[in-house]
Structure formats: C-alpha cells, structure tokens
Image (cartoon, rainbow, N blue to C red):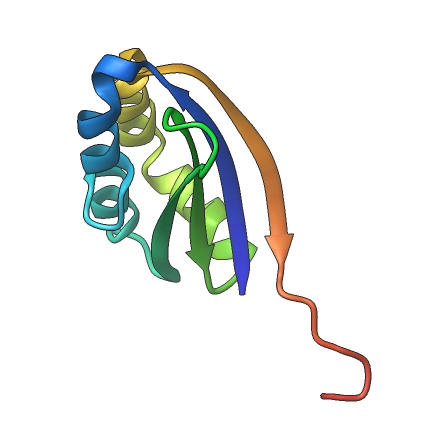
Length: 105
C-alpha cells in the first residue's frame, strides 16, 4: 500500500466546496477511480484549525499512481486549475508506504 499526502489551507468561504471536491466522493476521487490500483481517499480536518485539511490518497503500488499521472495528466492539470481558487495553499507532504514490522512477514 502506498499513499500520497497533501496538506491544504482553505479559504474560510470555500470550506464546504473544498470538502465536496476533495472528499472520498469528490471530483478528485472520481478522476482517480479511472485508474487501476486506486484504493480511495481520506479527507482529514484539523482539530485546531477549521481551515486546515490533509488528504490521503491510497494506491496499491506507486507504479499505479505513476501510470495514472501519465495517462490522465491533462485531466489532472485541468481539475487542479479549476479547483485552485478554493485554497490559500497546498503542500505535498510526500509519498509513503506501509511499514511491515520486522518478523511479521
């Protein structure tokens, strides 16, 4: 399992629209579902800051995400541009993989 995590600071007037677009059934998830290996998206909101969110996009393998990027690059860029105004900032936190504890293989 591989995940891609992003942090967003959302304009206070756009929180509802952001949650709809970036949540598990939003436009991003709908686009990702077109690709093999996509396992879902979680949207987390900060307890301390109502305008701060983190997304966790789950993929079977990082190669699945890479193939998605190659195949759907134009749609990705278009959706990113369309939704850009909802946020004050976005930061890619990184690509992560599930750690298997030593001895549990």
